[in-house]
Length: 247
Image: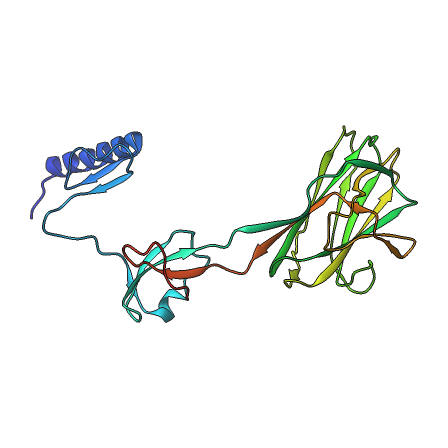
């Protein structure tokens, strides 16, 4: 088809206007001039279908960092598949009802991982902390704060109120194994009036606090640890079943 100078200019203007209007409306209708208000893309046809990207299992597995909800058609399995990411799992002792002066310069808490994955953070609760100094949390592959250090993170101490949550996030999250016991050591440098929120009723069964190298079954820190599970998986979509098989 031949386009002269003027018709080409008109075509370009129409395309620009379409892109701008689509961006403003944030909806696209294919086969319909009235896309549904809840849909960003509404495809309508009575004699054609929607064809998703088709690939083999090997080709699918070469996709780098697939997005949660990504759809493909697997020609090896002859299945429509969706990628589902794992969700972070939080465990620990979410609250305490007693206050404890920070013993000397460090305290140790053992804990049991409830899932397999990477430890991305540990939260603790503090009371009445005055500004100044640093808190460092180090995770170990033992139950008593010794052995191999798995990761460490530090926070500057700022003025906090009652039950202030402090989150230690790890730049290189270590791998934890479900039902294995680990520990973290909390050390203080230059802190003033540092008080910990603890539980003294023995409600946490996954570990205990350590004083002078010995466990004390009467105390547990109020803490939460977050583990990000193994990488996600591709799931077959079976109409009417509400689920599928993971691959």
